[in-house]
Length: 394
Image 1 (cartoon, one colour):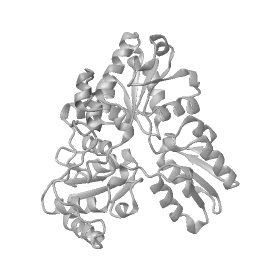
Image 2: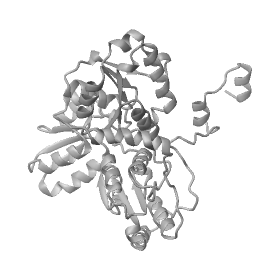
Image 3: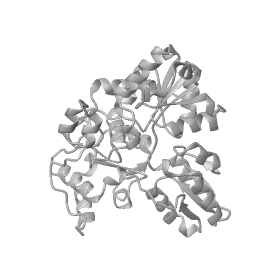
Image 4: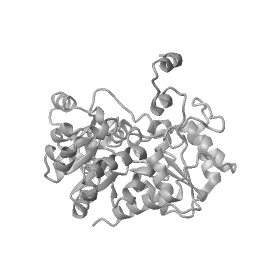
C-alpha cells in the first residue's frame, strides 16, 4: 500500500510499522546499524594477528567478556566466558580495566554498565547485536500492563520479576515497583521471594521460563498462569482472569529455544537409543516436560562435564555452545548432538564476529572510544536496586 493510499483511507501507520519499513528510528531500540569506521574484510587472513596485537597493546586497560553463545573465533579472545550475569559481575570485579568489551548482546552490555564503576566504559562491538526476547517488552508496554493491573484492582498484590534477559528500562521498572531480577539458575528462589512479598507475580519477558519454573519447580498448575499479550487491549485478558491468576506471564520468548518442539524430542529418542535429553528452561513447557534434564547454560556445561564416558546427549540450547561442547568432550566418547534437525544459531549474538572485534580493539588501542553502552543515571539506579535484590536472595 502506498503512502497516498494510506492517507486516502485515513490510516496512520504505527511507530513499529514505520520502524520496520525503515522510515522511523527508535533511539532506545536494541538494534543499530552504524559503525563510525570501516570494518576489516572478513576474509582478511591477518584478523587473528590484528586482534592479538591490539589486545596486547591495550594490556590491562581492556577486559574482554565472551558469552557462551559466541562463535569460537571470538571466544578465543575472551578473558572470561560465562552467561550474561556472571560476565557482568566479572566486569565489576575488574575495576582496573578502563574498557569492558562485551562480546554478547545489548542487554548484557547494559547490565555490565550498571554494575561497573563510572570510570569504566562498556563497549559492544556491534550495536546491532540485540535480543529479540528483550525487545518483546518495552517500557511503554509494561507501563500499560501495570495500568491494566491497577484497573483490575490487583497492582498492590503483584510483584514484578524480570529475567536477566531484559532491557535496562524493564529492570528499572522492576526495581521501582518492588521487584527483583532472576536468572535461569535462580528463578525459583526469585519467585519464592516474590510470593513472600505479594500474592501474584508479573514475570517478564520470557513466558516459558516463568511457566516452567512455576509449574515444574513450584507445583503450580497451568491454570494458575495467564499470558499477557502487549499487542492486545488489556493484554487480551479480562479483569477476572487477571484476578484469578497467580502468574501473569509476559508474551515473550527466545527465538532459539522456542524452536525446539515435542517432535524434536521424540525424533531424537527414536534416532539415538538411550539418549539423554537436556534442555534450557527457556524451551516450551511441553519440551521441558518431555526432557530428562532441565537447567541453565552453566547447568548444561556442568552436567556434560560430569557425564560418564560413552553417554549420549541431545542438547536444547544455542548451537555454538552445543558444537563447542561436542568438540570438547569427543575425546571422552561422549556423543553430543543438537536437539533439532534444523540447526539454529542466535542470529543477533552471531553479529559479534571477528571483523567487529578487531575494529573495536584497534579503535580503542588508537584512543578512539566506539560503541559505548551507557545507561542513564535514573534508569541505572532503579535497575541496580532490582539487581541488588537478586544478589540478596537467600
